[in-house]
Image 1 (spheres, each protein chain N blue to C red):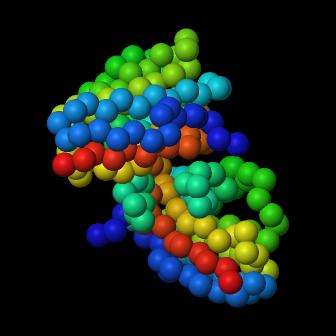
Image 2: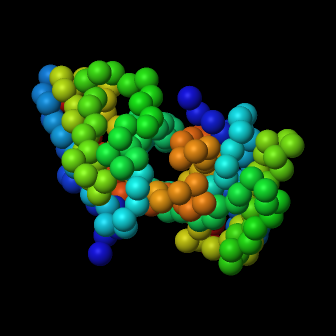
Length: 109
Length: 112
């Protein structure tokens, strides 16, 4: 069964704006990961946050994790047209990774 | 060098046929996976193998059988293909819970 649920399902913004995507999950985790999928392509790992971490940064990406609320957010700052893709959160527990339904992000030039 | 490679990239076949999808990783990872992505983009885990041993076997039809001849390979064989098997199948590998997964580029299976 799907583990995470992303919100919103779709997001459309202008280039330069920030994009925030949220993910909620239901069970225990070792870590939570975010992936990007461009249309017709495979998934690319973006960032991993461990269950004992609260915030992590990687370039223009900022991820937060609140294990008490079983939720995470992905912030993409200063978005670019090339950021247009689907973004998935995935929860990993003992090498069993389950994906959410994804957020479709469109960045308009 | 492609880290996780799947073949073929596209597969069109008729109902009732048997087909295989191959996956190889050159990362030295211990664990490999098969995921299915349906037309609505939902990704569901099907199987995982750790050092050739089956770890996860989700509720998939018996027509799907994974085979891992060594820890660098995890192939997926599908018998008696049905229309509902049409999807994109992704192979992935990982080293441990502290690192992200590396995915192959996918195999788009179309059953007609």
